[in-house]
Length: 448
Ligand code: GLC
Image 1: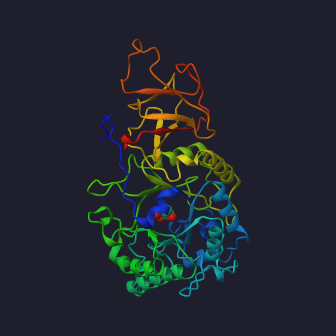
Image 2: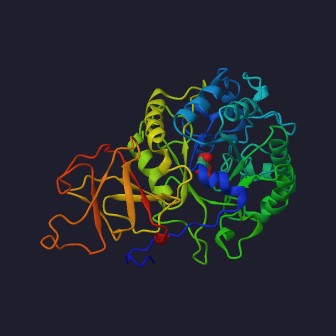
């Protein structure tokens, strides 16, 4: 609890050395790309429509993205302000976007005829982004993964499911999955993060051989970071299980405060959500989030010491939809001017203000003003604690002021001061940027 307020706020989580680049990057992009992009009805299409291998084969026979797709995606991500990127190398359908020696269900055997993970890794690395690979632990194609009684396997209701499952040997699947993860961490140069998906029911931790494979992958990629989906139950336990991963992820929703472990200590975390309501390309989902929504969600995450991973998927030809480009370009333009309050920043030890949110980096506080304010903008408890306020986007002076007509206007607290964009400071001025106006100010060290 901060002495200046009764509102709780989160202190910053401990960030181990190998996680530092990630915690400073704050904003990444992901994409879902595979055979389901051809169906264009979501990456769960095979499960939702209970498609057999034969029925799903039609997408395999038609998968043929244009050359240059990876460079175009990487360029859009950079223009959009992202600092790291995550690609689905294999989703739940089991299709591999890389040239695995362990399966024939892979992209070089489709009309594409080439390794798309290699193309993508080269493109994002050349664009200066950190490289993250998503790999589905769940596999609906591998013959050793049981179907009958499973909550989502496409063949769960198939008349031949029980017979098929008799031949399943789970250890064989684990060997296969470990082998593929070793391939991904051996054949594509430096990999910065591995995002696995997902644990449910008995499929968790030991079932995946999580500890063993993580140890092997770290031997191949010493600084590799892991997400939390190796386990769905024990990952917040104290002490943290070895295989629990380096950070927490929330999906499609943002938490009210910084995530914590079972003992209440703050944890590194990332909010992961989609630009529409779909992870992979959909021709019918037009629920586009506005640039303002993305900007505010990013500020929301950073103000709680978290990251944001935004999913921006191309269509089956490999092109990012025009609307997605438009929205993310606007987000990138805002970041170009206001990124100082995001990259390398975290939450401030202050209560959430009436008008928006705080972020902080070193001795600089960033006021993110999200709501128009009547009269001057109150800085709760910050009398004699801040100086040199300016608009981050253009370095214009912002005026710090005392109570208007002190002695008469006696609301709020004696330790409060105010700011505004012009004089008289008690007047009301429109916000310079209605999406989020960022005011940077220096603060005295004793605040922290
Ligand atoms: C889920 C879904 C999946 C998506 C992922 C992204 O677990 O199964 O389709 O890839 O979340 O967070």
